[in-house]
Image 1 (cartoon, rainbow, N blue to C red):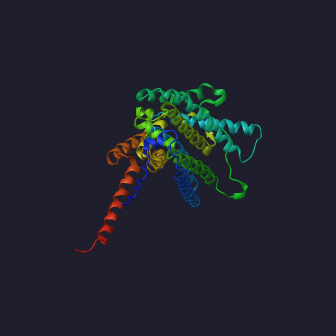
Image 2 (tube, rainbow, N blue to C red; image 1 turned 180 degrees about the vertical axis):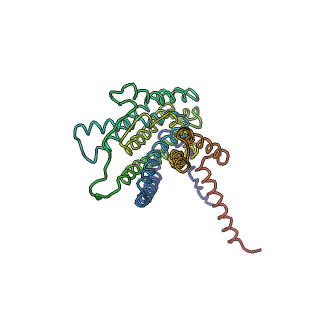
Image 3 (tube, rainbow, N blue to C red; image 1 turned 90 degrees about the vertical axis):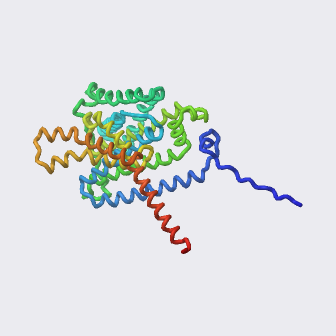
Length: 381
């Protein structure tokens, strides 16, 4: 009697095994993920471009502002939602990128340097300088937790505007800096809308940011971020360099904030301390919480809310006959009050944020649809 050899299926690699150095790579899965993210980016970009062709100039500027803020909220989501580090200084990081772009553009203009590449070069300079600042803050943040970390980042939020007012010879104080505005290429025609061109530039920056971050959070580094967030001791035992992971998370998030700040400054070709107040950092934090922590799709919700609520006081004062004093008070406090109210309502109704609520509704609809299909397939009794 012959015995049949038993075939034992290999066990699926555990999440902890994937985090260990030398774990199997899975290049096919990574390749399919990259292609899927690239296809989504191309589809979203094409859709937004088609929409901008039908919008008025001011609405195109709103689209550009959403894209600029999306660069920031997406990077902020990686830091806070995926790595668990709190930052109250991302408004200052935006200002760092904006001032770097303005100074670079001014320097190129003074030397009569022209060309399509000047804006990408300026934005890259803004990303590099802000990433360096994020490295410095991240080295300090890796040693701190809780309110101490929040205090350090809050100090950064107050330090950067103070520097711009102290060194007036470089940053021109409260008046800020002006640099040449971006004009559409001649190939697009003499009557091409400049605001639409700005929206396209901002869209390209946002799509590039989302594409890179979407692949980053799916990589081994992304799994390390989540492991450090969930349990630093277990992550350290798994061989993950906790401090280095936290510092790199700050660098990535700061680089995204620098890009968003540079694009935001490009929209008006000006940059001033008043554009990056302290409450901007609070708005950015509340935006990613309302949108859904740990979700890049939630960052999109947060960016849309930021632009919509910043325009809310102007819409109210435009349609209501209010005194000048009341209109000024509304402009300064209404957005923050509405943001706080939305935060409370969303946290009560959908603790996972808007994106978590969307996922819950989608899961219920799929379950209901699956139940109906199962009922139709079952034989009548």
